[in-house]
Image 1: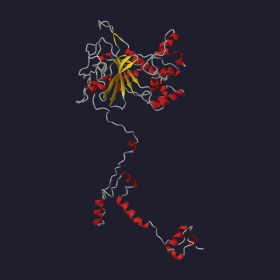
Image 2: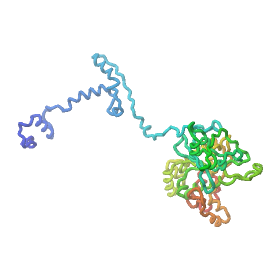
Image 3: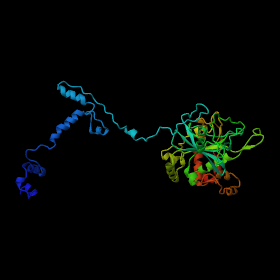
Image 4: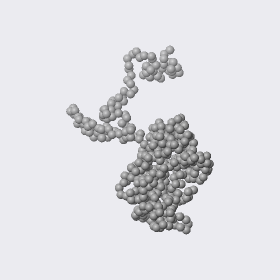
Length: 450
């Protein structure tokens, strides 16, 4: 039986075209033995494809069409028409088209997009002329009073043109309750907050953002006025106490005892709030003045590596590595913090400039002192911060000292208590031996040696 009969048993042979039958035999036979009688069905398309390729040029491939580039059909269409009309045998000099992709290079497309627009448009009032931080602009967006266990403080929220973070300044200063110029120490006020932001602002606009004098209440509403002159510091008044503190969610909010950050923040506000003793010639009527100073609270978690990397570093520490090695293993530096914004905030508060007051810096880190002085901050004294648990170990009656560490109120999860434990001692020992922190190692006791 013929092959066509097996495929079409119910159709008589006259209904099948001779060409269809031959094509079927070609497609189903193992190997074609005869002479090819039928041309390829796409043969008619070959001249058209060749013409398009020739007109576009050899430098154009199918990939160029993904970039909306058609030099053959657009830029050179007129020249091609002229050459075809002339119908000459002379070789024509063809203009070579250059390809410019609308896509950027891959190395640029893979880079994260960074906004170069400043977060604010206003500039800080210059207090000391040109300075190393002239390119950084900060602006106090709001200020409010916060009662703390150690007394009232004023919380300032800052924006800047360096990052999109909201850094804070916690100012302890009783002089902000009065606009009396007869006070011994000048008030610590934000120049950018007290400045006039626009011509249409009202007194209520200023009060709502925190530009007021005194204690705000329903019966006391006194908007502040822009400060045109930097208050002159009094030589007999000690410089304000300042702490540059980096955010630590684990130590301040959760109460982790892997570090002493929560304790340091609480201790800094406590020390700043302590009354300041005056020399005998400072004031005949008073021997002390209320504590004054500021804590600059920077959003740079984990010494600048962020909370995610910090949590991973904790796991590496549990495996036996110290805090410095853990950072290096994750591809970070031992300390990635920067203090340019902190210095700009202090200058806005009238602190640390050549014309303003110098600062007494609460820190054990010599690198921090050097970095701040490099940015132009005038540090007149470094004040040591010894861990509370280490202070009590130095006493001869250690047991009695530990008994005094009961639960007391404070500004963090740790509160007024002392952080203690093997993890803390290992952390502090690493900061002393590997990061150069200036603490007496003998106060660590036996736990730090383990």
